Figure (cartoon, helix red, strand yellow):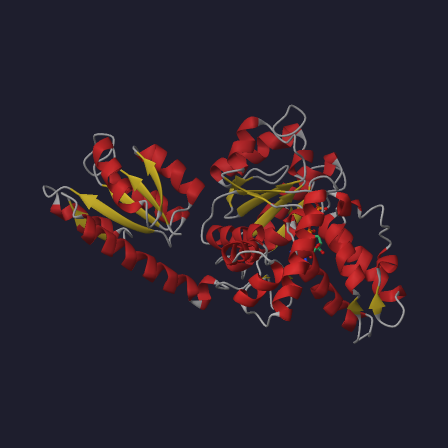
Length: 447
Ligand SMILES: Nc1ncnc2c1ncn2[C@@H]1O[C@H](COP(=O)(O)OP(=O)(O)OP(=O)(O)O)[C@@H](O)[C@H]1O
Ligand SMILES: [Mg+2]
């Protein structure tokens, strides 16, 4: 469902529009310029209905358009203006609004304009320049790397990546270790118009505290002992591109202040230098810490700056069958890597992959599969090759999971036996047709 943000300070009018649109769109509301920008960053709506007169300023909408266009130039802003200010509508379109519309509002006409806006937005995003991969279950990062995922949770992540890549907002990616945070950051960069410039990852936890500052900001010759020549910092080397601050929770406190200052004015000064240089970088931060906002983690002001938008990556065990899809893609790679073209997973191994809890997420899956790809006999990977014991795969004893697994297997065999004929299946199983339909829908079985 497409999203529409209604920005209107008249509560009755807002309510009317919401009422008219909420059956066809996901509707959000804001009643002032500031709250509309906040909501816009948070929701990244497809369409904005923007009242031109806000906060008692007749042309306030124009500055709102300017700000929104910087954040997401693909959003379709439809300006609603009073008849008394006809020129403002044209001015709004010149600044990037999609269309304008006079009060009083004709709901049918408004719906038509929104529909047209959504259609055009879709077409624009399908253009190769926008780097869209449509409804593809795998998200491309470059010609050879993909984020694999077919689960609903991952489809939502892909959608966020696509939307965020059309903007410059700071993004914080959270998730357990090995869930693909860096991969996600790369995808945002790859799908943005920064893709021809550098993607620069820096692991704040891996560089000694004394070196992080010079790594990030660079230095001039003679700034300290050992500074024998000028050196560009990582921020500068990401100019025009994207900087990933990985393990951001490990950033020393004094540097957090410096980073915050940089985020505010996008200017850097090399250590020992005297000049300021403006650098245009998109910042993505990542963490696997749940306590990031606590005393031991980030300063509050920096946290809010970095998390203008947050992507929470689900753990692998929360992605259903994705573990199999990812495993298959890793095996495909390993076939070439280890020259074993017939390598495959046994049915028993597939079951174990699904029931194991994957504390190390995709990285653990890669490691286990790489070892198994070398050690397995007859090109068939068995649970023993994966070194997962039935005790580790103890989720088999989770009753709900076991029941779900049984139900899925049962329905699949039933449909095979009945040649996908529901009446027949209902007769054999003694389950009513509507219940069968519901069960199949729940299990994602299509006929
Ligand atoms: N959905 C996925 N499809 C395919 N490969 C994936 C997927 N997610 C992660 N990977 C692979 O798993 C490995 C770990 O991913 P990545 O380094 O992005 O995780 P991370 O969350 O940054 O980990 P850490 O917290 O340890 O820094 C990488 O080799 C990556 O290519
Ligand atoms: Mg990482």
